[in-house]
Length: 66
Image 1 (cartoon, rainbow, N blue to C red):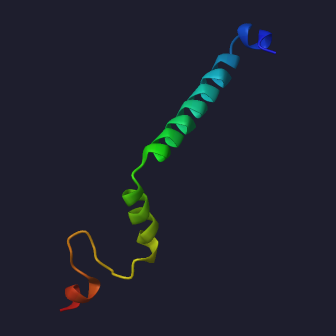
Image 2 (image 1 turned 45 degrees about the vertical axis):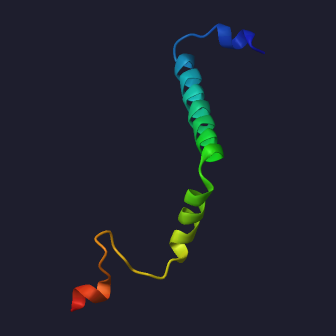
């Protein structure tokens, strides 16, 4: 099976390189998720359900109308 990988010519190197990039990316994301703090996960989980319409500067849309 691995004898095919050792005899690469031309475009096959791009295929192997893209496979390694893919594997390294998703392993890195998996490690980051494994070591992520539980408080941060709960904060991110609650964002879509947050009813307040606070923007980054601390003002709501109703404050801008006044």
